Length: 336
Image 1 (cartoon, rainbow, N blue to C red):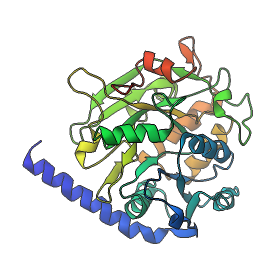
Image 2 (cartoon, rainbow, N blue to C red):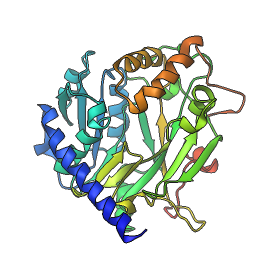
Image 3 (cartoon, rainbow, N blue to C red):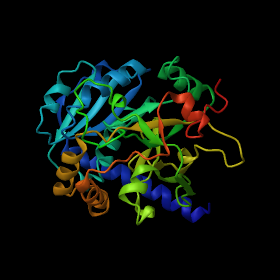
Image 4 (cartoon, one colour):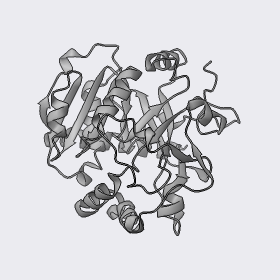
């Protein structure tokens, strides 16, 4: 990269940090337990709106993994989820009625909270419908991974978003609070993925899976990106650019080996496609607060009219992380 482009990215990072600082005024603290955070704690950051049905399992999944403290931004929920979060002893939560779109889809809010509270902590940034997995997650806690990353001087860890779905109609089975969503959405596409390199930020750009196959079958290049970098040893000088797809400084996006080897990586099991999906898609389409004039939700609204089955004869049933490693969807790299 040339000196001019490096300078432009430094200016851009400064601009995102200033923007996040200004957007702090959108946030009203509801439950602030940050005084309880210890220097070695692993932190999790998320935005949510009306995800009350998902939160009990989400919290259990990440508590069992080893997350010590949760940061939530609640964007004007009406389902009681804000009160639920405020009662959790390891959760700090802020509320806002401001525009999700004008916060760059929540990125400004989470950048601000990370700038203020996550410096020198490992920080995991995920959505309420994303379940993070990593190599050996069935036998080793998240701290084992972050300790290895520290020892290896690795500051960021990638995870591909893997869309999970049921066999049969999306609305055929009812999801209950506290239930493991993988009991219903247990299938995924084992192939059907394209990978490109983003020349500006240096990150990989991955597309495909059932959303490209079903909802964006006529325009697969418009399908949502599946590449994410959710786990970062945070520094207050950092900033996410577009969701967790990429961040600055640019070097944090170098989460892959360009010379034919493999770096360790994880997976985000994306459990969006439960029976709650149809109503959620309609609500978000009406709100029009998502990227690209909510074109993703326009596609969902059109696609769910006929209650599509995302399952096909090439679908694979999820077993464990080792299965995903064999399929090349994640890697343990040289962490053994």
